[in-house]
Amino acid sequence: MSAMCPTAAISVGARVITSRDLLSSSRRVKTGARAPTQRRDRGLAVTTNAFVPAGARIAGVGMALPKQALTNDDLSELVDTNDTWIRSRTGIGKRHVISGDESLTSLASEAALNALAMANVKPEDVDLIILATSSPDDAFGSACTVQASIGATGALAYDLTAACSGFVVGMVNGVHFLRGGEYENVLVIGADVLSRYVDWRDRGTCILFGDGAGACLLTRTENPEDCALLGFDMHSDGTGNGNLTAAFTSESQLAKTAKPTSESDGAASGTGGFANIQMNGQEVFKFAVRTVPDTLNKSLAKAKITPEEIDHLVLHQANQRIIDGAAKKFGLGREKVVSNIEKYGNTSAGSVPIAMAEAVLEGRIKKGDIVATVGFGAGLTWASAIFRW
Image (cartoon, rainbow, N blue to C red; front, side, top):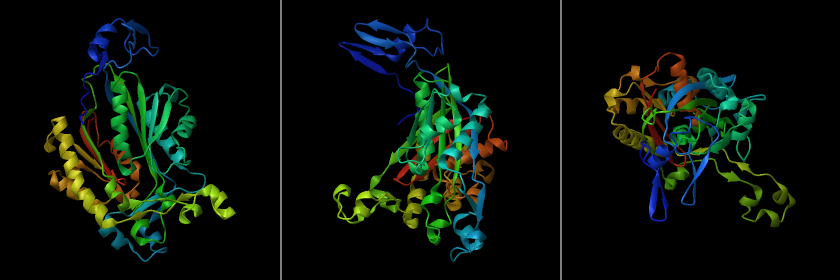
């Protein structure tokens, strides 16, 4: 898959109408006009300002974290562990977890508003919201509640589930919506509250995960060549799904009966839910070590960028050893590696945008910088993308 936007084509009988034809035919239409107009071309209705090639830029970023933090010492009071053991294996020192009235929606909304404020864009001017999450507040998703919460009254909103790769996949989605010329502002959010699905008496998983959200506002540019996304690569392998799961469970499912015909009223009327996270740590680690260099190499090749040209490497914050290994593989010094796993742990879809936002707020990532991003996790999924800031 390539980040370059190919010339789109529509077949009408023996004639092929390309996006370049549409671009030529729409010269008279004011660039950026929000209300589309139509013409007829041999019976084909053509929206003249839709699918006109455009570019995309990163306009603003934001992040949000729960108020409550759990240090490694706090966890040592819950399970048989200690600060030295956790840090030596993961690099994590603490993590944040939701409490009180905090939720996935509240964190995602806060991060989104922060990104909009940086971009100086009003919520009502957002056209599309993509919420990457595996832990929505509702089984039907949380993108629409985020839309309502921030006042993005004109935006389409939908959830995207690709686990820890979700934000990178969402960014690629968002850029392509803008490059089609239909939208002006696309808000991409990565957020998770996996503390809901952690067994806080399981030393193997409770030390890893934290809650948080990050967001990025993408804005359309008139010049198709002016595109922040330089190259990308995305994959899935469902045969490895069993290595990292939080499976749905219910009384009727455990009894292997259809819910409406369950013998007990409890099973027939009972609620279902998701089990705590189960992870084969060794297999997931080997998967990450194998796929991260491969996907990043492919994105770099598509972007025609060398590893030496990378200004910042932003990996999914799953384990400091994975981050260090990737940096060494590509010959990147510590000054080029963005890592905040020590402070926040693994925030799943939130980890890449939180790391990006924090680096921007600290003045590390600046305009014109080349930023290499990689996400990997449950599914199994993995994705990378190269951006020019």
